[in-house]
Amino acid sequence: MDLDLLSRRLIDRYQHGMPLCAEPYREMARLLDCTEAELMACLQRLELAGALSRIGPVFEHTRAGASTLAALAVPIERLEQVAQRVSQYPEVNHNYAREHHYNLWFVLTGPHRQHLEQVLAELEKDTGLPPLDLPMLTAYRIDLGFALGEHP
Image (cartoon, rainbow, N blue to C red):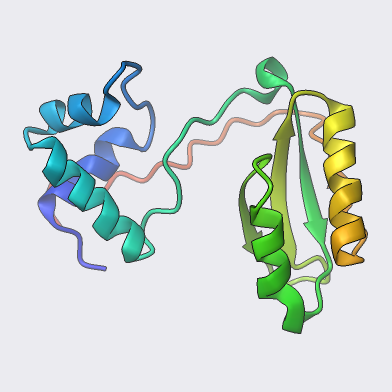
């Protein structure tokens, strides 16, 4: 996708830290020197093009409850169906396919460890696939932001 200037500025400025206020999109538009309607149209274009997967907070799991990395070994013909089912859980913020025996990976976040275990058990019952449960033992902080700059 060829990004226009507003898209580049939006991505550069807001990969980390949206405004914490009653009207964050209005504030974002003000700081990017555009209208809120232009900002919303830009976000919609990015989403439709597949360049934007999610807008929302990422919480420090130790302060917001519990989380775990999980994976399923899904027969390739069921991958899309199972991925859609996994994505229906509000505890899952994204999932992704990998080239491996365990080919569908996702992160679960919930109020406590027992809740995550219930979700994993329900997923196993729904799909017939036993999940690999990999709770975090050590936190590593990796900045996954990518600076695009103002110009191509």
